Amino acid sequence: MLGAGGAGLARGLRAVTQAWLRGSRGRSVVLARAAGPPGTGDSRRRAGPGPGGRGLSLSAAAVVEAAPRPVQPYLRLMRLDKPIGTWLLYLPCTWSIGLAAEPGCFPDWYMLSLFGTGAVLMRGAGCTINDMWDRDYDKKVTRTANRPIAAGDISTFRSFVFLGGQLTLALGVLLCLNYYSVALGAASLLLVITYPLMKRVTYWPQLALGLAFNWGALLGWSAVKGSCDPSVCLPLYFSGIMWTLIYDTIYAHQDKKDDALIGLKSTALWFREDTKQWLSGFSVAMVGALSLVGVSSEQTAPYYAALAAVGAHLARQIYTLDIHRPEDCWDKFTSNRTKPGTLQDLR
Image (cartoon, rainbow, N blue to C red; front, side, top):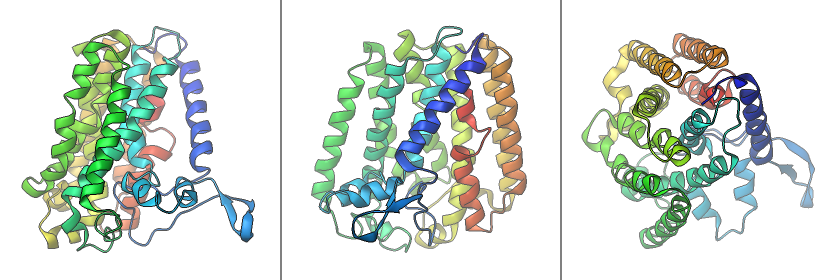
């Protein structure tokens, strides 16, 4: 847990995160839950002219573009060019691993690296499953029509084989953990497989996403401690679910017109003009649960200072949100990963 010396821990983790970001995508990156906002291109840092006069880019999208052409559809299928989803899957793991560390100690770097690898693989597997389920829907929406399966760049059979490869590698990562964590991690597979179907049957697919995306809040603690402490892990998991309901509802407002036309459901369509009231309730629940986590794990002042910054960020995000402007929804969505004072400060 983050006890005495928590401020140093937060600074150290923030430095690692910034270094990773600089290495993977420079100043900015194409961020998207699925395929990015309508009409959005890749914003990149240019580092001078490269071969053939092309500028060098450190963005994730540029890494995919530089890959061999036959490989690119598979990298796009796993959304390697759009890493926001990977970060949103990974961050709850880092909070849990950080909280499980001994007071005044840094989190286990091996575990952070292991879970980072697992986040890339499982997010990729989830996107592959999603695109396999949604290939007929994706063809009807301009924003998603160029996804590899919908566009015909990858056949359903090949995507299934690719999914098997991703899950095999993810299993290899999972087997590096203790037996308790192996069983706990395997239990999340049902959520990963069924989440894409939820938007067909319920207006709350964001809740299903939250259940799947925040499983790392349980798994990170058990990987370090050998089992879950319900007094810490359950409120941490709950807070992550509330966070997902916030950011994914905001994102869903970009797609609400298309979703309504093709018969898909979302919290954006359910909440409509009452969205801000619902998001405010989720924010209060999230901050309250994180406060309970702090009490249960005997946190000190730096934790609560970070929590206050999180609350302020959420309040500003909701207050300034314009659900009728897709570009504003996009900005608010990405602020959950890129703006100061977000949940990453709690690690």
